[in-house]
Image 1: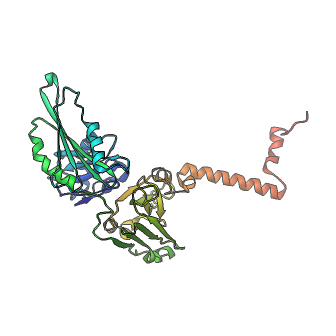
Image 2: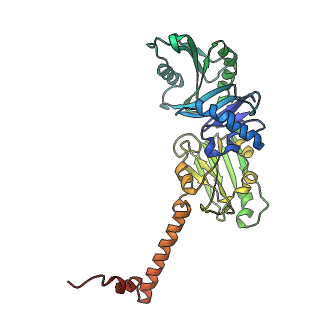
Image 3: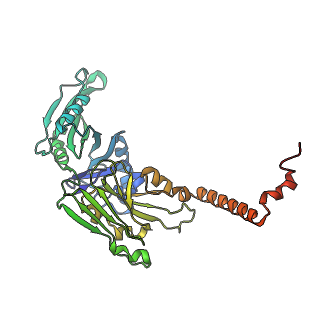
Length: 383
């Protein structure tokens, strides 16, 4: 199996399931997409009851997601949780030196509760991953022993950390070492380690009429890793062609976002959601976006399975309105001021009506405020 945390790809066995920390924003369906056979309502309820408390306990401030050991599926509580964190470093810094700095930051030799650390390379790692194990005594009279384990993997211009803890008996950690080693070795750059250097993705036509839908076959997304270029041909009425660099820096395409949202935050449930496919950089800023479509066609036009063949991380998120969409991904909804909510819509409607009345009164020679002078008295009294 493969999971796609932001800016990363992880190949792992079915015993592991990845859940992002912002699963509530993404929705249960997308968050549990890598949890095998989690489809029915009853299983979703068990996921919320059994997995979510462990997720909230395991996640910390810098955590981007949690890998759960789920050998028995989502119907039982996970037996292990491994945090995934991303740590930036100077791009000019060699990977080995970046790992050394991370190790110095995590090892505290002056703490009497800590045993001497055990630092060793991860077996079979092609990226130079390192594993750190350290025992700490806790509890009354320090009789209880806990072991912290940390895996550091330099991939995609950053150091990725897998971390977990084991409580007595300490020997239980040895049973999971090889499985987490394999998880660390499955971390890879989603762009540089793709199977093919060039791929063209095309949206599928949907059973709906209209000029916009007829132009869908002309839409394409081409990823050329040898040249480091992404070419996007939009499917709007006036087709546009955009070329962007591929990478993880500002203004470079680092991932794809399938965003759905209400076009106007209305109170009626019949107002259908819209969606756009967007090209985003590593910070989440939108670099290019498709035309707005009905959200019911999202899985038909741009299914996750098709987009993932391009090698870029793919996220599917639903937002309550365009204001939240633009806040999370700048550039996604430039017109959110007009569509970001029902109150904003009412405000602009009132302002527009006031402007029309004022302009109409001036053109007719009878400004609307002239009718107020008899009620409030003269606006400019004689002094």
